[in-house]
Image 1 (cartoon, rainbow, N blue to C red):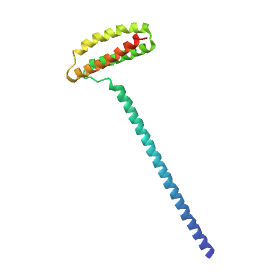
Image 2: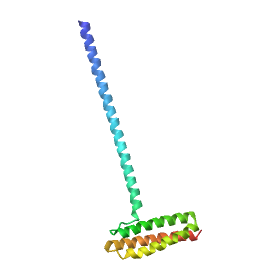
Image 3: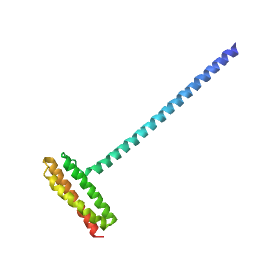
Image 4: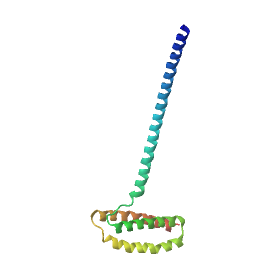
Length: 146
């Protein structure tokens, strides 16, 4: 009976020790998982901030207007400027000549929509057109220097 009792105590002792090791391992795994979650959350937060900055930079130069016709004109003008930039970079004089009609159409439309501006929109329009005028002047200089 003594052997059985000593064997049972030894078995209990080993069980307690192994349970403690298992608990420690589980705690270590939980800590590691928690750290990984924190690192992932930080990376996601940084990616979200970076994306927000890129979106803000892309939208920064294009104001929004309350009148849909004015907004449509501004969007068309942005497309025109982007196309103009590509032509300047490619140094394609044939494409540049084809762009002149689009520029004339936009000038006519600008006169129409400028009469619809009120209050804050008028100031946004003036600021936007001044900035785009400077940009177009720089692009024209780059085109003539080629």
